[in-house]
Image 1 (cartoon, helix red, strand yellow):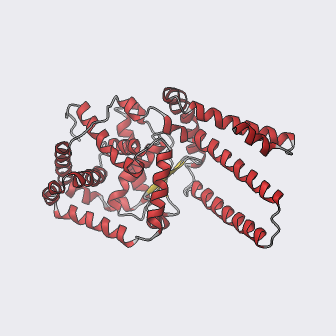
Image 2 (cartoon, rainbow, N blue to C red):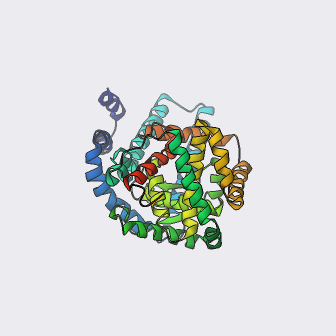
Amino acid sequence: MDAVILGVFLTGMPMKRKIIWIGLALLAICIRVFSLFPGAVEKYYSNGLYLVIARLQRILFGWIPFSIGDIFYLVVAIWLVYSLVRFLRTIIKKKATRGYFWIVARKILFSVLLVYVAFNLCWGLNYDRKGIAEQLHLQPYRYETKDLTFFLQLIVARLNELDSAARVNRPPLAYKSNLFRGSVQSYNNLAEKDPHFVYHSPSVKPSIFSYLGNYLGFSGYYNPFSGEAQVNTTTPVFTQPFTTCHEIGHQLGYAKENEANLSGYLSARSSGDPAFRYSVYFDLYYYTATELYFRDSLQVKPLRDQLHPSIRKDFQELRQFYRRYQNPLEPLITHLYGNYLKANSQPQGMKTYNEVIAWVMAYYISKNGKEGI
């Protein structure tokens, strides 16, 4: 059926263009078939071709002080708006013939094919790898409510322990160079214990769309077409170290959000900077307390009350920040992104982020509690 549809679209095309179409379609089919074999993806792509592509991207664009990927997205957005206006104008003026619609349909299909192939070759196939669990020999931990309570107690203790020192080290993080340098050093520290986390040719940058991101609900993102990690640097500064380490995790090929969260956790907790360690436990507290609240809300309040007043003030600041940028568009963006995650091997959608709890617990158990959390 697909071959018939493609044949119809190729009708009347010059031979050179037909060859490009057929080549692109075959490449898309090969990518789809290859993605069905996680072992092969892990060996030949994630630990092979992708490492070369990602390193080359970061070498090409990492030295540029602003985000090339953001400029690319901006140009594409302007082009899409311009194309839509032209399309609507043609229809309004009643100049849209049957042949015109046929040409538009061809262009859309070709663009979809091109984006699909480019996205998967540059990064997207990492969604189908065996991933971080295979590397660290972890089994997802099926935790009970009592496990969550115990885990949250550990996190509360870590936050309280780090609170004072983290505040002393927090002001320098307002400077992006310190934030990014510290994140790279966190991965360097982690890589000394595990070479899977070696991070060559850093390319971490502030997002040009940071203020827009506050309304759309994102704190960072990875651009697979430029290999850059972008961070929203307008969010409360104590959240930014973990966000940055999370995005670097995506750069290392951990496409799924729970895996990038675990990578971010392992790196930030390896940092010599208390502000970085505070940031990751602050995030872990949010995930764990939310999950425990849905299971047994009465267990959360006593543990929340054990937090230092200054830490509770940080949570209040973060809530006020999100409240300030609430708007009708954000839920729609969240819904669409959740569907994107589901379409890319993350059936839990936005809840995939919370799955880091199971991975951190599994890591804790694999170390027999010797390293703590």
